[in-house]
Image 1 (cartoon, rainbow, N blue to C red):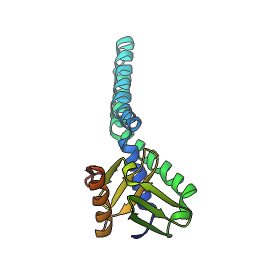
Image 2 (cartoon, one colour; image 1 turned 90 degrees about the vertical axis):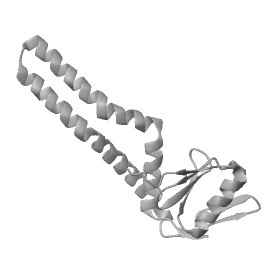
Image 3 (cartoon, rainbow, N blue to C red; image 1 turned 120 degrees about the horizontal axis):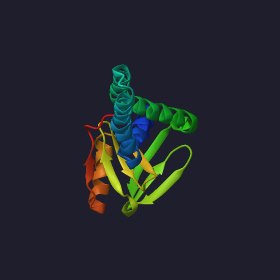
Image 4 (cartoon, one colour; image 1 turned 45 degrees about the vertical axis):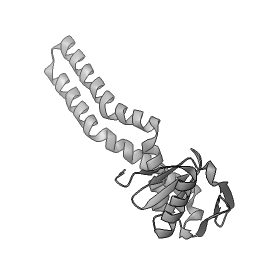
Length: 174
């Protein structure tokens, strides 16, 4: 199967991996709930000590603004980080042909820079996104495959040979 990588597919992969990570989930809770709650407690504490309702109001407004905007800001920071990383480190892969095929129980991936052969039994999991499949060899190495009939056949072959399930993330959004 011949394919071309594009920047958007790689960005979606990195954002998906980030959103599935434990660290991102903890940061999301921190930014969404804990920081605003801390500001409300600071406001209440200052109100109790000074009896100044303006201070309580200011901290409450800051907490509300944090509740509404900090999660979006976190997503923006992650997206900008991965865009910069991709532009700096992976841009030479875009627009170049890549071949993915299965032969002799091996997944063979060839591109301009390298060729790799991986035993199908080494593949850990499969993910279906809206426009791509992710074939994960381990936690740090994955193939991003555009969705089409041929890629669906490759994914089904891997799924059947490894008794894996394809995690359906077609509704995933960043």
